[in-house]
Length: 179
Image (cartoon, rainbow, N blue to C red):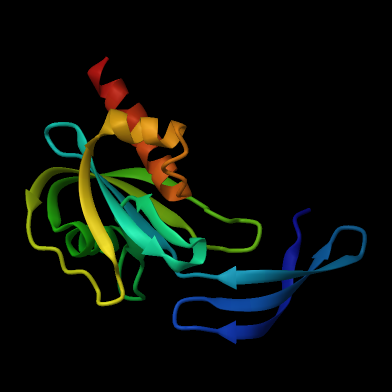
């Protein structure tokens, strides 16, 4: 029998996330209190051009104390589908539109304390447009060979979980297409 959420006491409600204490009942009449973050989810885009280069962004992330390598990604707005979010974010962050989209699956980045789900997409047949960064985003756009990005993962230069997952999913998919 899996535990069921019995009650939630909200601790904090922000513009993006909420934090609460959730009390669940475990088998054997055990009760457990968990600190759970509720998040609307996000979309992650692996944009690959005709030269097998992948779009990576360098973005300042205060929480980790500096610039990190990431795939373009963003939070799903309440009125959007994950694919719509992916299309919007790719254009805003990287200045790119794609004609071909492929679903790469989903992942939970931090299931121990957060319900966030990320939807991964492969974007191909690309057209360059203008970036539309938000005023609070410090982003630089790079196009690197997919092989280079994978080496960067191995060398611990790319440490962002969604980016690692997206690059590996894409590499497996593209490798299988060439067999």
